[in-house]
Length: 271
Image (cartoon, rainbow, N blue to C red; front, side):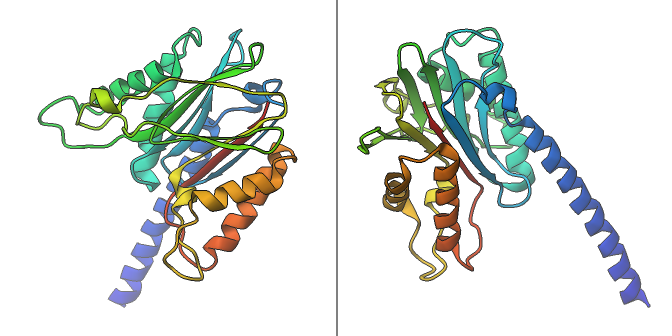
């Protein structure tokens, strides 16, 4: 009888945790950019947002559509996944809202250092007695459609560009991560890159959950950047939605029966 009772108690507790996490998932999804922040800014736009455990540490973010001039797109990958990752992602999302609250004047490299500061101080990791040492990798893009330029800076995250002619360019981020106890050293600080584009160019931004996924067949090899380049090159004439669908398909086939290793996020857009 005691075993049956314990099973029942465990089952009830499990139910509470599951329903709590499912509710948190709705809240986290609600934090992602609403359609009104996307409309009118891209020729086409698509995203893949798949937390490993219902909720997670990945996010993408767009500046308010109320602001005029260039707009900002950011992607971040916070430490861990599940509940801790989701709590961190909320801090990152709120920090981005603070950085770009009034206008989009702050350049992406400087914005990443502001984000670094907000995450470190927000978690009290600037103090010697800090109990946590967490942070994020991130990329920030300031897109100016009038000038056909993108200002880009990345902290461990790069940006992929496929020109209208099918030329593939990988813009690398800097080697730092943001928000951790250790302050970012000068040599590793994010660098501002100015990218020109033509109408019809395709851009993709992915978190490392995509490239680091182990294959179902070998159980060793990761999806990697070469395969990502291949799927982008094979589909670059299509809409962002079709490109994202092809990425999703290739990724699922690659993962096979293997467990998902990390949260997976990808943002694909055509300007």
